[in-house]
Image 1 (tube, rainbow, N blue to C red):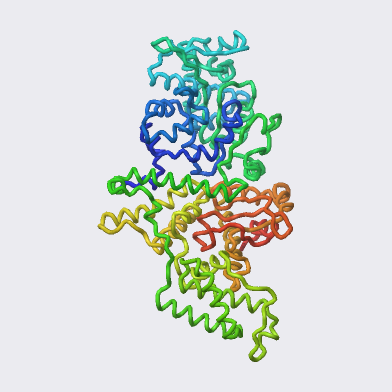
Image 2: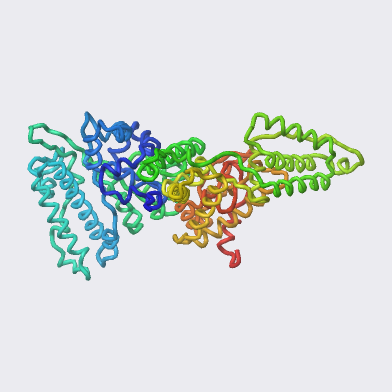
Length: 640
């Protein structure tokens, strides 16, 4: 049975209409709208940074000319209307026609291999630029050809450019520009495709001579058969640029960041290719002013958009929930067994009602609570007061069941024991008042749920919001998590059972998928990353399960004083690299400048998959205090 959730359907769809039907417009609105409103998407280099599966390629595909043309052609179709509206707001479509001639070039191995050749660096850079520019020009004309435009109908518009520069690209005539691009691409590919790189003096002149269409072309003017002239801004999107050699990547960024370039140019990349300090800086600053390359002022010449968690974490989480839910419903509508039954809302198929312990486990919990009361020497009257307090609170919280109430009572008993002098507590018939009143809060209820998970194996992760929150704001992780639930729902449909998963079923499936995901880690330094998250998770779990729940809902992060973290790259470069990969692959996320206890911290928050696997809270804010030295010691310890 085909499950599009399992294979990221948008990457396998070749038909534009089918692709556009799957894509949610929400990521464009969340990540790009503010930059478009500031006029920072097409007049300078845009670097789109994201973890694997964060949606970089999907976003890039939407800006390709055939996609925009398809949207315009189906502008009256309800399916595409919302996406068309958002892309129009981003300036890609104006007056009902595409304004951009976008092409996306995947940076496959051809481009990196150029750097391995035994040539001077200047020559290798020149070959890369020539190959990229010629292929971009060829792609632009191929896309125009698909729309029925002949090369003879195309004219390049250039201003303030010398005759020599125009001549080097073939002039302004479309047919000549296309012919020159073919000549250059063929000359460079003869080098790239050869088993043994040719000697420098054997390289064809077309591969090394001045060829700079990106410098020359400002726009392309197309004249239709009806005599109507349209103007398009050329756009090149370099996808998966992290496959380049790091030096090659830096040179590429420096070249494309030059302000005299008039074409729109984007680079889509992961954090891996950056130096650790630059990668982490891009996250800590939310992409606004990441470390600049020599001679380049990033804020003026580069728009860096990080598809990571923003500094406003609550807002970002809510936005991702919206993105994920829309994406899930679009994918579900592509599955015939669901769409034929009008089952196109994943949230409605996931039960989120309160779960309960079995009768035998509830009796076990009651017995343990009675024993705890005796051990702590809490009077019957004090317990009755706590029970009344819990019942009063539960009157407005109908989801609280008897096992929840008993778990909350256990927390109150332990908090009471902590807040009463031990001498008074153990006096005969004593019922002393605590030093601080005990209150019930959502955090106490969440702690009680967590205690029931680890003490009695009660389901804890269920419902669409938990599914979204466990995905670390990563589209691919969300789809992989949702896939196992959708598969279970499909099986229920085949067996003529109601298409509905209980909380317990969801909990078990999600934790199984998280364990599989972590077990399959195979990225650079993953063993050191696993050691890092094992240490953090163990400490978080220890404080989260404290009987008095002193940390509230629980911890899922490791807090380092911000001033210590700021010295990470200089004092602990090895840890810096490990942390870069931990962030790049969603094992950890960084929360800088977090104010708590009159100090400023940088939190290393565990990723959603790790949280599920280790049974920690998905709620944010709780952290264990530590030092950068503790984490650095893990790399040095042979038994760590």
